[in-house]
Length: 352
Picture (cartoon, rainbow, N blue to C red):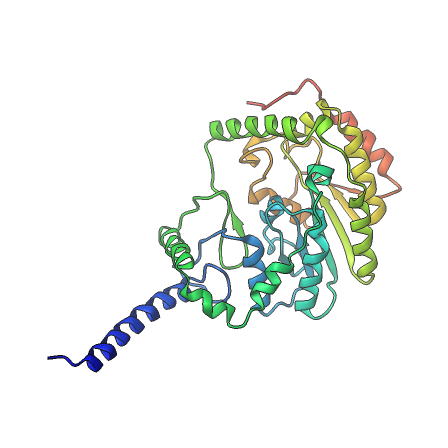
């Protein structure tokens, strides 16, 4: 007959082995980016909580880059390795408020241990409205989480993390991109490819949503946006602050114009130019934005468009000539007149 003591020892050994296997699998797949290893079974990663994942990645990695890129979900689709002559880290996250800009930058600078040579900020017109910037936001809670004692070891025992790890394992095993955004282990976002008819349907829905929720009299420019940019310039005087406007599908830009917000767009762009060192405008009708195949919903471009943005900003070739214009205080009026001349108010909805 097995003694009580032997039973307890056996139980603890079995439980320990099971728990060790559970934690080991979570470590092996690493869905919260607290370790750095990469292999064929964790090279497709789900977006779980982008802010926490990227805060973790920065905290636990050898974070030594000369350029920081921040922006919203649109900017996540820019491959940080596509810039020429720049060593870039893409710290873009979903639904980023301009109120969060400085907290992301401050954290990245702290982890780097010195200022960056340049900071690239991707800005979205609709996020400059009062309705999209009411709260004073920052990433303090994510930093506090990653700094908790034994954080990355404790989460290895999480059932939720285990479920994410299993999904990442299956995605990686199939080498399949199934979400609007999946990542590889080099912080590069990939997007699911949709049939053209689905892109058209999703874009039509997005245009209707923006007209209903973000444009027209629902939009009121928040003048704090300019001050945030000025504060970043003042805080990092040795760093080049380079801002680019995110390119939306032409039909979505036309909706902005149709709803009477071109004057707001002009004010927004002028404030950017007056507040920062270098500005590239991509948000106007051009050969890239007129092609619906470059977007999955008219609101988010595919990574190959992000490659063109990176090339344009970093001075590489191979970019459509009409995609992206450098705007300065000297040429601002000329640029706005040029954009106005390209607007075709007869174009509505989606070009099929």
